[in-house]
Amino acid sequence: MSEQDPNKVNDGLVDEMARKLDQGAWDSRQKIALTCRMLAHEGHSETLAGQITVRESDGTFLTTAMAYGFDEATRSNVIRIDDEMNVIEGRGMANPAIRFHLWIYRRRPDVNCIVHTHPPYVNALSMTGRPLEVAHMDATPFHDDCAFLREWPGLPIGDSEGEIISSALGNKRVILLANHGFLAATSSLEESAYLSVLIERAARGQILAQSLGELQPIDPERAKESHDFLLLPSIVKSSFALFARRVVKREPDVLF
Image 1: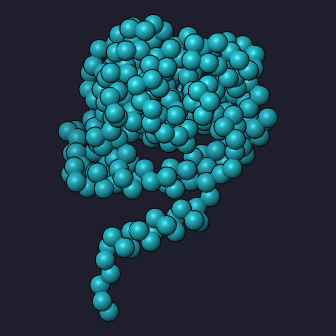
Image 2 (image 1 turned 135 degrees about the horizontal axis):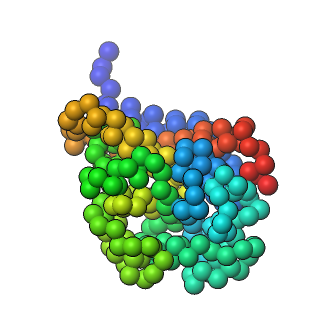
């Protein structure tokens, strides 16, 4: 038997996953509400801190109204705002902290969704002055793709904080914010949600491992290979669909 080219095998696998994996069929408002609920279930929303925004093709943004907890999100309480945070569709007001999202959107035309939260293990890691480490396969989506802001610039409700955070993010997908939390800024809602789930788990794993001893980082070449595979659109979207189906089973009201 002749040996197959591994690259061709991989290409075939990628094509098959794109064709066969369930990637869900929800509209943008439903996906925002589903993301809020899945993150609430993961412990990301114990207070009003945290926001999700999605850039629409007309230059407006979808988000949840201020003072709604992630665990309360439904399709019907998603609002539409303009780039000055004026509400143009829906009831309520935009969270003032969305201002720093707008700085990122202006600097990063490739970004269409931003998720920012303060989950427990990311919070704990952010208090240590240490960046996120890639020492486990499940953390490889952050290989060379997670920036680190080493000093807290204050509440992210002014232009100065927006400039600092967007500059520190650079061209990465994710940033760990010292003394604060994290944000994911990617091309799709599914990808930002997926990375938001993974970073809290990666932070938890890092903290647990460091309690036992020194971390053993993954070889950079292998980490990059895993990073690229785990961020394939079919993997990202099918993972989002898995998380979303769990939400719908528990809380079917989220879709309305």
